[in-house]
Length: 358
Image 1 (cartoon, one colour):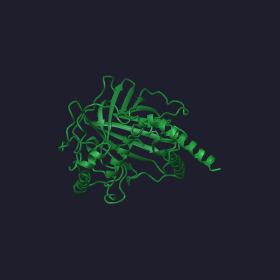
Image 2 (cartoon, one colour):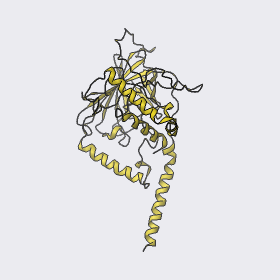
Image 3 (cartoon, one colour):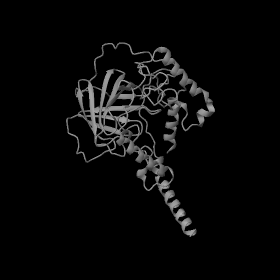
Image 4 (tube, one colour):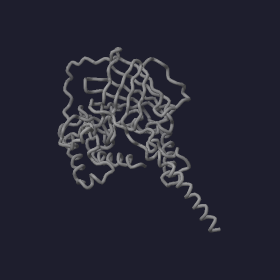
């Protein structure tokens, strides 16, 4: 794996030690974090050690519209959070919502984990803490981003998925042993093709920004990680043929009141979310601007060949400032020639050793 990807996984492990899986939303709170050098954007909110208060009843807000009359979702949005995708099985896992004491305990634990390594551990990482999008607990204090099923957890997987995962593990082991037959054995994230820009969108430990653009007939969602601009037609055109798979799938949108409803099909089987079945995976996303500074991003997944029942999540996106910077992900792409050349060299060495022993 490339160093950037390993850094993401390592930082995530620290958070999961407190509240497993990754998670959601940044608050504009200054807790004394170091300021970026001139010309850089403000660091994404780090509300570690403070409790996000539950959202108050919203004041009357008139939805914004584009000059051509569509609801206006444009702007730069951030989805960083420490609320996990799935509800933890222990500790606070029996609760739907956290109270003030629970929330503060979680934040204090995370702050302590970040401090205990000291500056030497901090600078020894591929990226130190300055670059991480920690966020805080979602304002309504949910213990998971998943809202359906009610237990806040991804439903059990099917035997069909278990077979696909076993096959994938064999391929990864072969690649990890330094003997890949071809680049297809490396996953798309390692090859810098798709990662967190693959829908549905989930928070990561850094680079949680999205920029939304609109023009008549289209909405574009530009993901900071890795790089893809997802172009969503909203002009009523049909989906492309089912035999044309694409990395980000084939996306079509329409408006239901002030909500952008997006349906995506035709994912590639080698790049789909969580090893789902490309033939049966059905994804519906909803983008609703609930006030000037917040979009509620919801997604619902159905795939009877992967999960025993549908499931859904809701992640608040907070408006932020600055711009989306280029994500320079090249290592796995450029280094592939070395992986393949190394494998062929090992094969020749093994063959020579066999012949020499005869």
